[in-house]
Image (cartoon, rainbow, N blue to C red; front, side, top):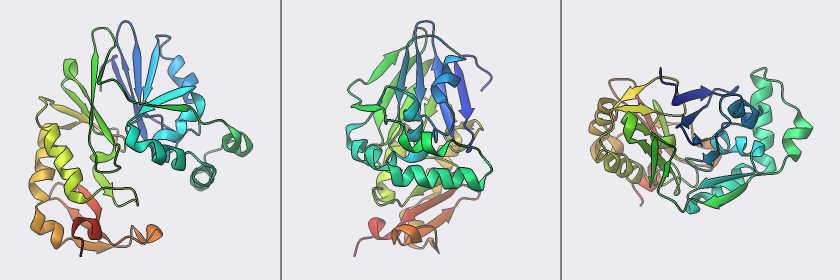
Length: 256
């Protein structure tokens, strides 16, 4: 966004985090894969008191916690956070970095301490001229949250909505649960949308079109894919006329 108060920043492995800055504080929503010194990057932008909040506990959003002392996330994602910042997932991130030609100190990355994770026990943060409200949005994970910035009419969706939305990890909720969280977000008067797996600005109409397309009948007849094979998940996919994709766990959507 062309706004000094909102910086949607891409990390070296292609995922985005959002820095929100008021006149008395700053807030970082998500931390990326952690293959770079995320804290130093933020401190090069602002020296204001910083709060770090995670949309959920997956590695590509939470691993940057390695560069901070503490972070906040929904209590229902604390176990997810511990799992996806552990050594097996760090090794996975290193393999991803190597495959993309991104240099990372393996020894340092594997040995760094995980930031202390505190339950998100506040509903909003006043940054001074900029306010951030948080609300639960179970779907991608049980403890996923979204953030709303009323001064910018901006919704930060986390992984509950992206141009390609995934809802099939073992800890994921049903497709219907994720869609219900998105519908609940429509109660907010947002106009603009930022999501972590794109650098573009989306709009309210994009969310509406996605929800209108993802009917129960279309979910039932969605196309099988191999995306969830790693987790032994029967994944199915819908693609909207606008090209947005929704990959979900069919067995959770339609349990036998």
